Amino acid sequence: MPRTESPRRGRRPGDSGTREAILDAARARFSSAGFRAATVRAIAGDAGVDPALVMHYFGSKQGLFVAAMEFPLDPAEVVPRLVAPGVDGLGERLVRFLLSVIDELGDANPMLGLVRSAVGHPDAARMMREFLGEAILDRVAAAVSDIVGADRPRLRADLCASQIVGILVARQILELPELAAADRETLIGVYGRTIQGYLTGPLDSS
Amino acid sequence: MPRTESPRRGRRPGDSGTREAILDAARARFSSAGFRAATVRAIAGDAGVDPALVMHYFGSKQGLFVAAMEFPLDPAEVVPRLVAPGVDGLGERLVRFLLSVIDELGDANPMLGLVRSAVGHPDAARMMREFLGEAILDRVAAAVSDIVGADRPRLRADLCASQIVGILVARQILELPELAAADRETLIGVYGRTIQGYLTGPLDSS
Image 1: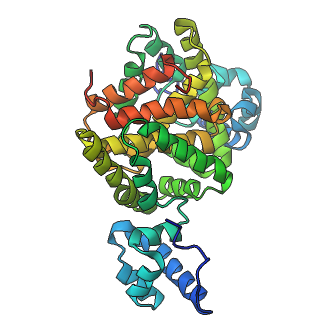
Image 2: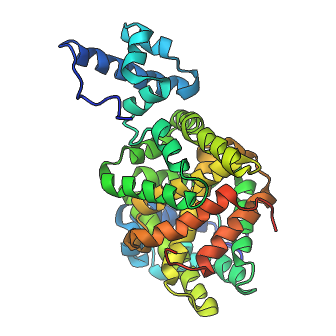
Image 3: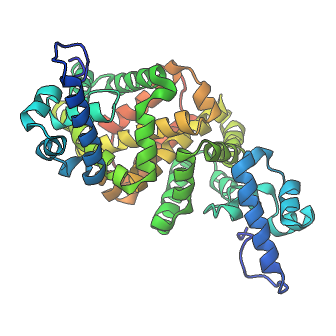
């Protein structure tokens, strides 16, 4: 599915301003109310447009968030695609995809800005917790539950998130030297095993 | 080894002000120059005292950093103690210790403030990278190299750091719900296996 904020579609002259007004309203309301409590109806009201127009442009509240925050991937598309081939190698596929996004975007990665905001501001942390939960972690949990039949699927998704956010912080922000210098295939192998273990391995303490 | 900033030692009336002046100077210089470039001599100069007095109070530049930043553990004491029983169960011991520190300190954990600063400010990120590198990660790497004979020991230490900082961010700052609610023994089991794998497992991509 192409990113809905793509400028490549036939549009009338007034569209761009309207779209920007919706995105501005969305950023303000997601930031203040969080992801869960912000409604498409309220955002549309703030922007002075009909809620149907917001859905027309962005498809869903998640799609609106992805566009407003320039989140560099659309979870509604990415998660099913990564899960589809089955559980074998799922951890490696997930890490391979994420590292390719991270390396491609470099310092311009909007995820870094979102992590910075979330770490610095409790409201932004709540917004990220709610968005990540609904858009990514619940989806991953459902897939793991469906195809692996694993217990405590959402804890498994949260464990994965803890390693992935740790990669972002340690490699891209703290820039730990050996981690920053390691070649991508090594990291895919090592972190892929970790993520696979979190998704399908034992959760007991033995 | 007791924390060197403990107030429980015989001291003259003027000591407290001198100690605070040294800590203020240390915070300012570590923040601006980073951990590596800041010297005990320069910090002593800023505080108007003899470098020997700084060493008398804090033992080392690392000890001065630990005291100035209220870093909640002294790596010079903790790392050798965790490593001493040998490689078996090292990952679990490390995670058990860290989670106990994290849970004991709660929201008052100064590590959270340091992570927040490091994520928000490049100068603070460099300071943390240099301190973590010299005080913790190089020590862990040396131990792993000595007792396991593992290849690329510093990469292994950096991998561990990426999971540990991820635990801090995902559990204490983002407060991902299942991670925050999971009982400590479950987390020690799961994360302990991850850390053990990073310290002693394969680093190839297969």
